[in-house]
Image 1 (cartoon, helix red, strand yellow):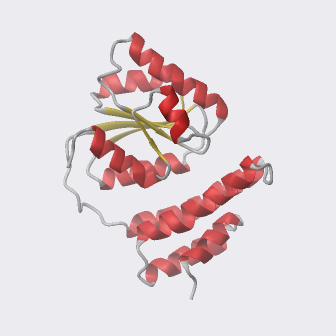
Image 2 (tube, rainbow, N blue to C red; image 1 turned 120 degrees about the horizontal axis):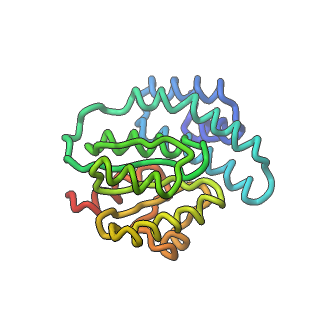
Length: 212
């Protein structure tokens, strides 16, 4: 009988097929989908990210880890409760700054939708202007940004400066997360909130938008 720790190991080792099969087994055995996601898949991804930061892994390892997570996530999404939270009429623009990586962003989007938010998913490879323009056109209440590599960190700061320049900074709370980010960095940039895990996005959104 596999455990969530076993799944974390498979994701950490970037083994898509064994990880997918183990995810299916854990969910069939009644494990909480959020625990499978957070303690299994996400922690496995974090392990690879930590090795990369310590120069004990290469970019290809990150790619393989993403492929592995992508094999597991659809199964978890299917197991999550649908429609358990009523809509709250709050709209959140969500996207990845510059890069094409979308695993974390997609997780946040799924959890926000389950949490009752209307999510406008901009996809990947976005610029600061893209975020501003989409927020204005969609009538958003918040902007959520995924930052997964160093050049995007500078662009995130540019986004906040752009919002100031356009005199809409107070209109849009901006939250951020991603592999290269931290609470200290987010505080320094002036972000309204930072999340270490996908589930943090929901808590931040509810708090910043005044929802109980």
